[in-house]
Image (cartoon, rainbow, N blue to C red; front, top):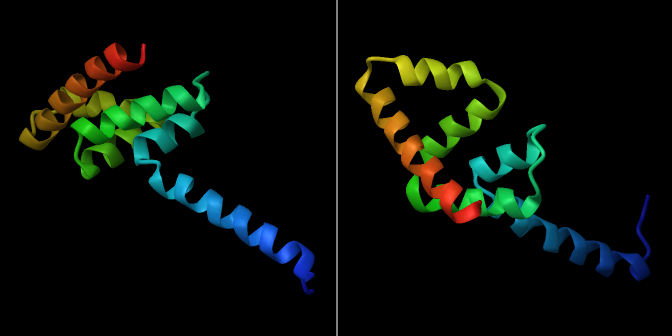
Length: 103
């Protein structure tokens, strides 16, 4: 199947315009957008911005997993491992800041 030249440029432009948005969203923003919670794209974007300011990439990936698996967050909170304690403290700082900045 070939695409007529009439549609090739608009289609290429649409694909090009969509890629930066998908790539720029960090794991927290993507998880927020994909969750079944009633959050707008603008709220998820704000939360993602706060995460980008306060969390490492690894912390964002771990926190994003918590959207689908809240038990994993609970396990981290109750863990005695230093790495989990560090993650939980970073998440508390992030969540407080996100609540203040994003409402």
